[in-house]
Image (tube, rainbow, N blue to C red; front, top):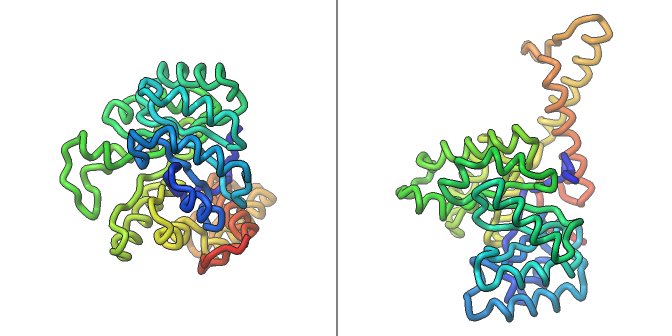
Length: 299
């Protein structure tokens, strides 16, 4: 089920109880839209949020964006009703908060399947110390798992961290989830940046996530989409290097060599996989109508 090169540079959280935000998201350049029934919806509006989302999905066209619904925990008063509503809509995946074990994952899939969602993919939030420690077993629990999404605010709170721009206290946890996800070939997404007005801090956070190895980042406001998309989009210089690597590796193999040299740098065969991934992502992004400047997309 997993689409290896599907871009998830930006996954935009949209509160499910606000129709105007849902309608606005149809025109935004987000690779994925997460219609949130959980944290952004007050308890007294949970029922209203489900009704609003069902009403919005009378028109299921959200352009090229992947459609994901984040439910409330299944042990909450709202989780089961969320699942029963979600499986009736034209969506790609259900996101489950606070995943902490393979057993919980399998039980969750059983509940989703029993409601009629056996064809839906699943995404999970890793947002607790236990979730981080159990990330490897979670990543390997089902091939229907398409993305592991960090919940960095809850995680930082439970780790009793003081917030810092470089997120020093979180780096170990981020790396552990990345290792677990990559061991099972899962997409791994960083948590959001909450300072909406500090552009430099937002750009730093995006580039830090990219350089750590994340596939993308969750976004809490449309103003952040351009910065985040840009950080995770290969540039022309990356494409030229990737093309040179592929050509050099192919020539080396034809000549009976396993290694190649590109710009005075020794290139191992495994770099061809990186090169083809970068080119595929670049081509997919441009098929969406986005340039390297990544202005608003006209759908």
